[in-house]
Length: 86
Image (cartoon, rainbow, N blue to C red; front, side):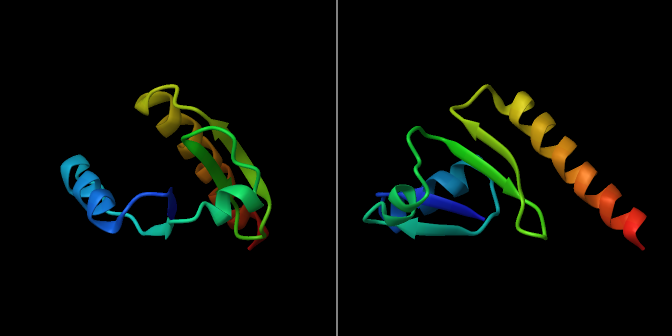
């Protein structure tokens, strides 16, 4: 899931189409979510595991490859932990 802050639906849709991204985006027109969660910089990436534990917070953008590597590492850890529970 993604939350877009303060932009109109058509602008977000155009960006997703141009980027060839398929993800769910919630629109936060009044920046309520950002305010509630203390977002101070964009992008602000948070990975939350199935138990509700925040596993990664990344503020800013260090490049697509770095973000992908960090997110995949966390997702792999979550999957491994679930597999070991079983």
